[in-house]
Image 1 (cartoon, one colour):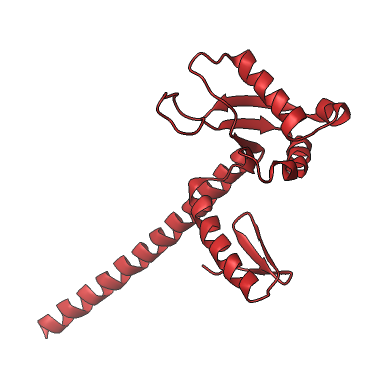
Image 2: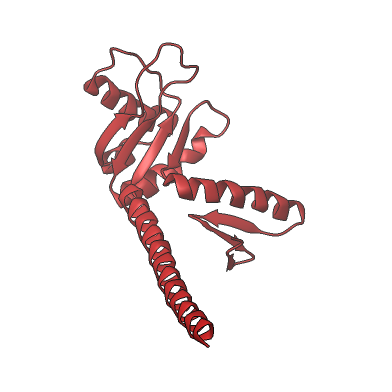
Length: 178
């Protein structure tokens, strides 16, 4: 009889512990989602420029000049559009090493309307060594990689699809394959 009572108490204790564990797991999942959302929002107006030459002696003014030249020559922006470009911050990614095969990318933080303007002009970079992309948190980049593979398969099946942030849109409907 005492063993049964002890067994019941142990089961009750286990159920309480399981409930607490489940609640904490949900809380951690929510915190992870919130953290990812905050990371995405903080990077929302960041663009990554790839392919611009790099040197160990590059000054801030030289880098700024390269960015301006990139916008006018590579993105083929006219004077009217160039005057609309508002770059708030800019810097190279990582440390310079002379053994690097490709130049370090440049992160630029811009106003939202500038971001859209630059991305519209990025079509002129097709087939060149230059790139202009939106910056995403690493977790989101991983998700996007998988979505682009899935999009490629859908395209082979004749389905119209596109990747927006960390979502796949197929025939106008949002699909969450994860």
